[in-house]
Length: 318
Image (cartoon, rainbow, N blue to C red; front, side, top):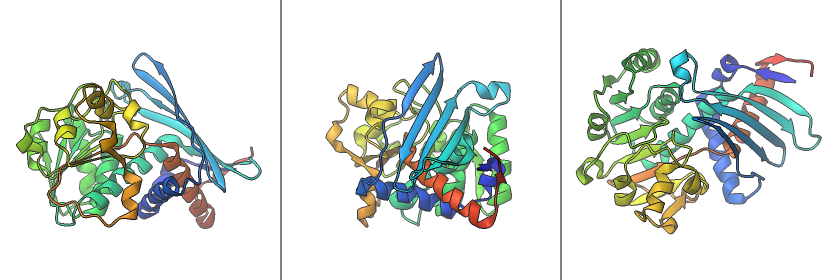
């Protein structure tokens, strides 16, 4: 059995990961998969998620924990284990760092959102949240678009400085701005990506602040979490979700639905965009991702097959 740690997974090209995420959406359209709703176990502010999924060749099970206060103890908020198995024999094929898989595939979900929902002319963007996922979102954003100015905001100034220093080593030809407030970031950015576990909207906005911008919410995965104010979904020309489960799972969708700010039939699945060549120019758009096990399955299987081919990882006796 193959073991792939964070470093091994980090060697995989971003294009491979983003293609795997796109394949997951294609499977959504074809319905050639079996994915039950993920299981949530909540313990005060902490959450344990169990995420199984089956395709024709593989099945995967991810066990992931989300501890929002872990950073105060010098640890990442997300930890986990991914097990990839053969869907013919049931044989376990690989154990992987679940947090690394989550960071990569979720970054690619945001990156694919940027690729499909924006034009190549965009030059400004902002990332709300400078944790592991904020960094991954920035990397896939910059993989897909030639941004000239990137704004970053976090409650921790040290986290922002660390993220900027890391990104400068990989993407040196742009200006980085440590935003003093979320509002400053929103006003100055064409694309705004939020990767936080905030329980209340990160900023207040007027219609002029949000007009013609793309908002991507990545972090909120519980009904009591909401990253963006409801005015965004109210004024949006289009609202997309990676899975309709988001209407129940994330406060960014569930709260506006509860408050009758938007009707459920106005919310569309992102996968449908793969069948079109629609251009969204000067449109206000909200894309909410809560993630799904199908992303983990396609990403883990792509990484596994590439790792076998290129002799990446460590073989273990099961």
